[in-house]
Length: 391
Ligand code: NAP
Image 1 (cartoon, rainbow, N blue to C red):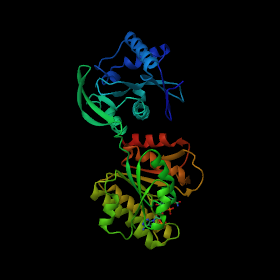
Image 2 (tube, helix red, strand yellow):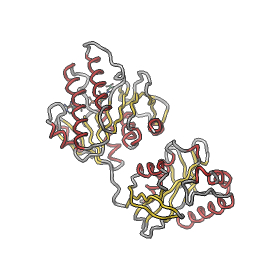
Image 3 (cartoon, protein in one colour):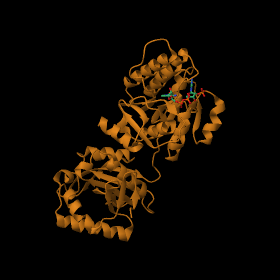
């Protein structure tokens, strides 16, 4: 029985049958360079340590666990929790994965489950990761898990960086969504609110405020075409991330494609730069990579989208450009096709909302432009692949 489940992984206690596979992991000098003293472990040591992990799990209910890929049954390594050498009630989170599991988001997925679990353990005041400073990949994982730098500590005979998350100080993301009463945005809000994010929604029509409040969103009246710079800056001030999901809409003419889809976006890009809002995710459109010439409204729309995308890409922000195909109101499938080019596939707005939520949670998608259509890849996996493309 798994103790913890994630979209792709089961984390379960070790058994004696795991010794041969784990002896290969712990015997690999490249893997162990970053673990404990930096030396590989013998099969005998692996045996003794797995026994100790299993015993501790039976006794305390927490320990280092086997990380098993559910689809294949492969044992990828370990991840789990141990009492921290610090004496203040912290639990130490850690992961040791075989080399072919690196770079696939496995540490982040397993580590996130462990951190969530740690914060439910009675008496656990904090969760810490001890990482040797040269292990930059694990430092990045710890930061993604919400752990923050908290000095250095000598352990296992060498210096480690300490990254720490204290209970009660979990800092949710503060997200501003433009076009907050739009169809995609209204599907995005519950996804962000459910994971604890603070969501501020920009609307131009105050009558929409109550609907946002009912979704747990703080309404901010701000007309993106008419607000002055100070108003725009105030609207984004203090946010961690901005999502542009606004648009002049299907009934609008060429003029509003320029004032809203292009200039509305560009003005919020400038406001985010001015206010130090580092992360910006724009809902663009398929076709914006090579917009047609001509005066037809759809061509003007695609050129407006393309120009907004270019302004964002030229900014100093951590940007991601999401280019969905034609949107539908179909039920979410949880699966998409996301790549530089996917063809003119339609996609449910609910799946776009899930992709936006996943992109916000994955800082490594910064610097990526991708088209989005219906497909067969689970959304977390599709976003993890995009994140790896940039690393
Ligand atoms: P939507 O329902 O039309 O929502 C757009 C929102 O933008 C509306 O709530 C609208 O508010 C708001 N807005 C318009 N002008 C504004 C202004 N001056 N200030 C502040 N807010 C303003 O759009 P959606 O279906 O969720 O789509 C969102 C995005 O996807 C758009 O950027 C669109 O271009 C893009 N997209 C669409 C398709 C498609 O097939 N439709 C395909 C690819 C990409 P009001 O209620 O006040 O008008």
